[in-house]
Amino acid sequence: MDAIRIRGGKKLSGTIHVSGAKNAALPILCATLLSDGESLLRNVPALRDIETTSALLRFLGRSVSSSPPTVKVDAGSQVRPEAPYELVKQMRASVMVLGPLLARFGRAKVSLPGGCQIGSRPVDQHLKGLEKLGATIKLERGYIIASAPRLRGDEVVFDMPTVTGTENLMMAAALAKGRTRLVNAAREPEIEELARVLNKMGASVTGAGTDVMEIEGRDELAPFDHAIVADRIEAGTYMVAAAAAGGDVLLENAPLEDMESTCAALKTMGVEIGREGTAARIRRTGPIKPIRLTTEPHPGFPTDMQAQLMVLATLAEGTSTIKETIFENRFMHVPELARMGADIEAEGNHAIVRGPSRLQGAQVMATDLRASASLVIAGLVAEGETEVLRVYHLDRGYEHMERKLAAVGADTERIKGTGG
Image 1 (cartoon, helix red, strand yellow):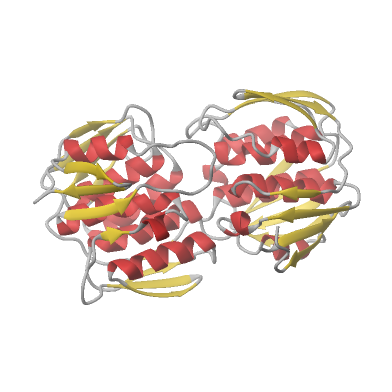
Image 2: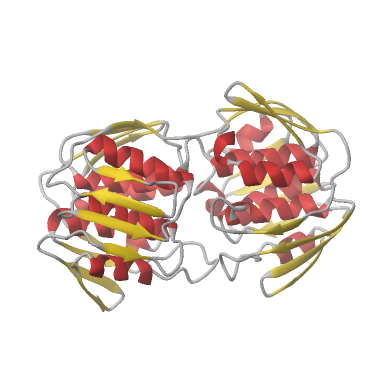
């Protein structure tokens, strides 16, 4: 397995281009199952999760030509509405083929998902919603087996906001007969992006970005051509990296309109963020200030930025508190940061971060996607050399991070096949 080696202490200066959003591209790739003909996705990031989803679509019978930033998906000669464990275990988002397969072909067999071990994230909200639309669902030997001659629109009330659950129901409802109303729906920008694509395909989706959404289904949908929105989490990660290492970084294609809570938190901590057209300039000219932070569903502070902000909090002059309310097991980066000298006390879903810490380079282990990014950021400011092992997690969500950081002055390199 590859590792990333970082020699800390370098200030960052220059320009980083923000890639297309992984969390928008994945459901949109799944939406290609809803139509025949060739769909074209542009501004697609070169990531492991994109490769995994492309492989799954090929298994299902689609013809996929993937050469990021462009991916073409065309209907194959035969559809196999079954997503096996070998593919689904690599990425939880694979469960989003369930709604499109069921709506389009009347049946689906999809493995219960795998992915990052940061919480149980059950799919019960997906299944309850599909049953409300008329599906018959049973669980057998680790597989979801669903059938429905034709889904019918109805009101679905989620017990809690769920991003992939909302997206699965949106896609299923786009081919259901009649109108579907989703209540307590997730409000993330990636939900709005999927709605834009479904509307291009001929469905009528209104209310995306609010907690009540309505989808008017169609008998058939058309293929589409769409450029994926910029990745707000990648942009936020590089903002934290620039703030932690110091210097002056310009983020091209930064979706600031989707990053209000992240920008507000960073500004509270003393980071300067300025808009320059479609770019954002990040500077840190003074000391980092402590913060009280709670992760929440959008538009609250995103759980996907919690680990990165924790690293910045280790540099703050004072005590920060972080409460994680989305996933119950998302502090796995804490022991690794402690190995580097961070003073963090975590219990349950609360963490107390006492700073400023003098971080020291060490060999550390990536445990999930965002934890990987936090360890790379820690390495940027640590004294000496840090080696982040098992960066296949990082490759799921960040396009060539070590290259992008090196281009703005970081001393980063990928080490092939370390065995970690």
